[in-house]
Image (tube, one colour):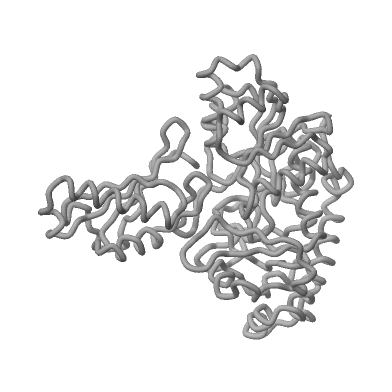
Length: 433
């Protein structure tokens, strides 16, 4: 028997979903036009006003929003309500320059919690479950999102946050955790750690809700086998709310988008043309129920496919595939956004030439980031101890910039292959898609 948190919404007819979207889009467009000068300017440049928007069919008339817009408008430029009406901010895991900061009213948080509650119940969660949340808390949306969803379901919530594997496993055993929420790579690591300690019989997990980084079907099967659970995917991004924008059901064939809150489009990343369902392209989201920070036609840069095929779980909301890649050059390593430009900034500041290569691999289901850096001829003539010290210095500088560990290898001048076209900066050896 399928579990629904809000069956009247999750199983609503397509006509009802469309009616909600039409009404809420019109209201949201008027809301941002009247309250956000940044939006009003974008719409005026496009020659469109709220009077031109009558339904979802008119969505294509509106301008796109990108992460550059969010950085340009930082911190308050896209805020659509008075600051005193906001009760929280969340922020991205970090990119170059200005961070992306999202604002929430209490109403926004309540709706976000509802979305995550739907995901937990789709994974079989009930008020009798113990939901073990080891996504990061703080500015990162993972912990707070699933924490709020678990409260809405009425489950006992363990707000573990990330790291401290010994304590994670102890609480799993002692408190009988039944649903695990974390990144897939950490779930795999927990599985290995539990096996090493011979504690499989002490673990009561039945399901896992994993997101924040790309993971393959092979990794899903490995996690399911190691932990003896069913592993569910969840998708979200800070700019749109956090985890719970979409989630998997028991069918495990794509994630249902919460269409009463978000309108999903697929576009050609080069032309911006809207593509029909079933075609691969860049995912674009429009928030239609948020008060403080509603984004309209936000380009996620994730490449995927939308499907309206009937789902055996009974949910009627459109499904999105796992992201198949990115239309920009951002990497997600250990759940953290990493841009080549960040690494380049560190190298240039330290006196290195802009000849480098980023190699990402996955060993034992854990991401490994390696940066190959060419030395100048003067550096190359240094003794080995100096080269080793230089590598250590760069490791520290990159950790400070990225927030994660990167192995650094200094190589001989002109040893990294040159290209007449776009430089091949990234070699991603992970089989993610």
